[in-house]
Image (cartoon, rainbow, N blue to C red; front, side):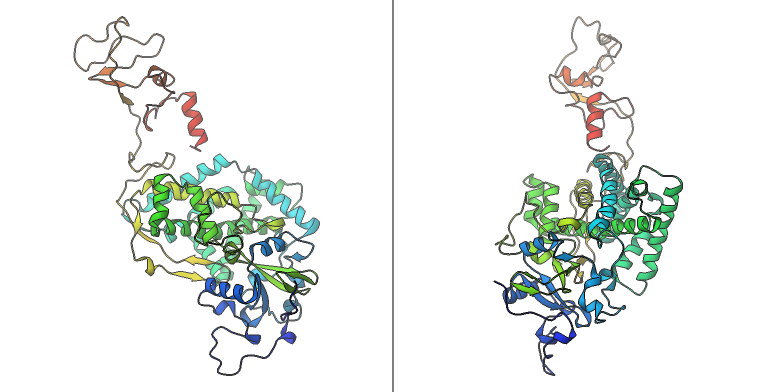
Length: 529
């Protein structure tokens, strides 16, 4: 049933301010909570849920009124009903009547831009169609290979020291390295572009300059792709029949780069922190009860990279969660509170393995088109890091970990760790906790009790340990038998000789420096190497 209470959409509708000296912390006009002043947003969301239900009135900076959607079902209804709700902020009442000033702290999030995430109708189909089509050209196996090599390079930077800070040295770098490669600007990846992205998202005094630096990188990419199109994301975006102009291409490249970067950096940091601070969680990973992708999915439920998304706007008078929403009202997509809605998750600590109905990537027409890229970066990055540094552990008390929190997200400041120093590894090899620092071609050996077959010709001239002179029937040499240790047969024969699959008894290093059999090549291709 719709409530008779209608909350303010502008300054003319506000009730009286709290009396002077009111001890209520973080309260504004009408006794509404200021989100940006809340010391603990999770706690506030639960208090709002108890007081108002699944949709609650709150205040942004400068006491701008807005609704925050707390219910899982209500959030899904909002994002899946474009006839009632839009992402075009130009219809927002506080913006139209001047309540929201051009210098409002959240203007970069709220201001309308000619990009697919703010468009609707035919324009949304045109722009979104180009981005989606370019996403579909990314080969999943090639993507995992790019992620794996980038992970190896980053871990090589600190693996020999025995200590690292995984936010600054890993979580904030891996997504940028991968996205620069995907977009077609691998040469632009360095510490500076990572710092610019972080600075821009923090909204510092130099954020505008940082944004301009990133846009300069993207404009150079667009100009280069126009003159010499490549088979990368930028090239496919330019060649799409939608006919995006240079500015549209650059703006959508920025959208993909920054959205993927921020979300995935938070996802990596949150997942690694959970592994390092929750013994039960790590035990499930080590014991095989949970895979890394399942661990990542659990993190998307418990600590989504974005806690809210700005914003949706009512196109007409309507009702949502028992509240009257008037035309021009603004609403926040409440990802974090929606993920712990008691109606869909009575126990917020429950294991959500196999369930992808969280709100981490939004939904409806504006659902994140690059979510599989973010998942892949987190899956491969976490898996390879833990494989390289098997005894990695937190290097501070858990209560000393710090976050920077905003209405939109919670970002882990640092994650210091210690581990047994490890040698560097070839970036093109599979990660291992017992690697050869520099892989070298070598003979492969396997333990066997099989003696040399009599009748196959003279095996040796009697000298212990000497290689046999007899050849395997055909052009390939026979395996040697030396003190009960037999050299592995050539690819395609070793497994058959033991009655098992080809390569089943061969160590990972076997065959480097010589042609591999079809099965080995297929396995390496499937793994992305």
